[in-house]
Amino acid sequence: MSAELDALTVVNQLRDLAADPLNRRAIVEDQGCLPGLILFLDHPNPQVVYSALLAVRYLAECRANREKMKGELGMMLSLQNVMQKSTSPGETKLLASEIYEILQLAGKEEAEQAEAAAASCQKKAQFFLGSSNKRAKTVVLHIDGLDDSSRRSLCEDALLKIRGVISFTFQMAVKRCVIRIRSDLKAEALGTAINSTKVMTAQQVVRTENGAERILAFSEDSEEAVEVNEDIPEYLPEEESPSEEQDKAVTRVGSITDGMGWLNTAANFLTRSFYW
Image (tube, rainbow, N blue to C red):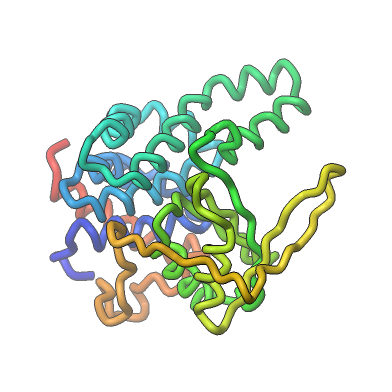
């Protein structure tokens, strides 16, 4: 891997690795990666900040990571700075606010679980989805054609371009995507974006009053106009990959073994690039 890695390259790779649940514990336990992500939250490039927030959001989905992340030097303060900075885009502020709320609850969750495990588990799941945040809502999509990593990348590109999308998580085994969006963004806009790939189609998953799931198709006659978000980082094109050597490249995000070598390289880069 080239020694000339820039900040956006590094944070995009960390974001992609953090997107896979198998990698999240290793990233947080690494001595350089989590402190590096915190430093990226104060980076002057808004694309770097947004990509770093997405990586942190992925890491916070692992409940075992939250206490360590909350106690990491500078984490909560940097999130507050992003939320309060006047130059931060709206989606960036919302994402930082959501992460801050999740980490703030890290200690309280354990106490609630000790009092009433079953009831607490349900409450925490609801709060984790951000149901108490009136500025944002959660949409679940079932995506026909979401079969492999290349299709997931197409889906990521489509969603990242929508202004109002805060974060998203894929459940590849069941071909679903859980998406956090601004409360004023319609779910139809997500369906339009996914359908525009021409190789995937999206349907919305909702729950009835008795808890049963229903899958609703988006009307083909009512395509929602999609407002393009130009303030977010682009995914690295294949030819700009920081490594052309097949044995060192991160060939699939789902492999913790493939990712660990890159984590070590990223940590070394962060150590050389910042004062600790």
